[in-house]
Image 1 (cartoon, helix red, strand yellow):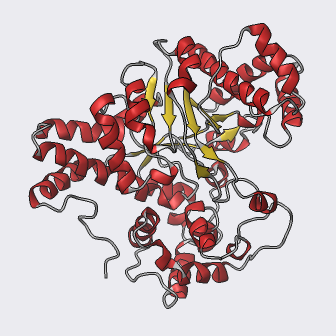
Image 2: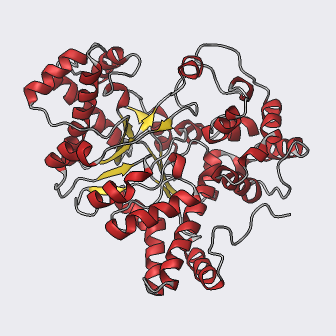
Image 3: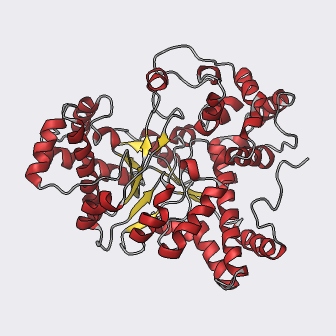
Amino acid sequence: MALLDDDRLFPADAAGRKIARALYDSVKPLPIVSPHGHTEPRWFAENQPFPDPAQLIVVPDHYIFRMLVSQGIGLAELGVPSADGAPVETDGRKIWRRFAEHYHLFRGTPTRLWLDDTFQNLFGLDVRLSADTAYHYYDHIAEMLTLEEFRPRALYERFGVEVIATTESALDDLAHHRAIRDSGWPGRVITTYRPDAVTDPDVAGFAENLKALGDITGCDTGSFAGYLEAHRRRRAFFREHGATATDHGHPTARTANLSGDAAAALYDRIKDGSGTAEERELFRAQMLTEMAKFSVEDGMVMQLHVGSWRSHSDRIFKSFGRDRGFDIPQPTNYVAGLKPLLDVCGLEKDFTLIVFTLDETVQSRELAPLAGVYPCLKLGPPWWFFDAPEGMMRFRQAVTETAGFYNTAGFNDDTRAFCSIPARHDVARRVDSAYLAGLVTTGRLDEDEAFEVAHDLTYRLAKQAYRL
């Protein structure tokens, strides 16, 4: 029994389905460009077998465990590492059994699509995962993971990845990236500069992080000028390891354009991790503009991910730390928030700012009009809670009329779950093919143009936006 329908996500009407299938067939074999994600560079540096099916598929994927937690299954039961040292389940078979017993919870979700794609197309499974088939799945996948062709580098090549970008803290020594580079393996795994630990005063250990930033750069981070120079040097270090982009995860889209003296005075008030809530938010806002100015200087593409209330559960944060499924979308204002930054850099010829949102209500009202006029702005694809077929389709419907296709940045998978990468890109290619087929059948796009756009959305726009 096939787990997947060959015509999944295509239009129901015969004419639209025929065109969508042809469009999809034309882009299906294109290489995967994965310009933003959270896979571990260690995997590619060491190229060791993945430990077991649970550690490969369940434990690192918050899409999976947040759904299970919502039904009363604890993170500890799923083997998610604790932050407070409390014991968690380490038996991969038990973790997998819990996952399999509750697989029905994923019906109708994009996670189910990605998982079934992985199970069928990567591991050759042809029966649905359930409590009855749990150990059949586990043992089969575990056996596959012992083979050379299922090691990280081999999977990279099997997936048809042309380039993949990981995301590292500004304080990371990038040792794994150096190991990849020095190994002689031709796979292209590059890093991305993520400075949140040293730009967000609300991050735990902020003052210590600033000291560490000074130590590794030889800069005096006790002064604002020294602090900015430290960023400049770290950005250069990341570029030496392949980085073409920076990434910024902020609670809001607020930016600021303070004078040099005012920014330095603000830094003095928050550099030890203190300051009022307003001062800390103002500093984050100012640093987005400073990072944009750096990007004008050095050509690094700037990515902005905002609108998430991070670690909404204090209890989970204390016990398990960040990125444990409790980050929740909230409303975001981009028109007012981005204006100070755009006043400084918005018309700069060589500056690119890719904006992602978790607030769908702003797509047609704010983001598409902004990207439709400011040459620096590109719209990132649906992200996180909206990287689903419906979210992708709503994105195209909301932004194309104002921003067109060419003010968007293609697709990126933004995942920690390595094996879901080809599945996620396949979903995007199918949805874009379905959307373009609708434009053709309703007389809004010629068929030959649709084939060109399908190629651009799948491949060219991401390479162009991220300067790859």
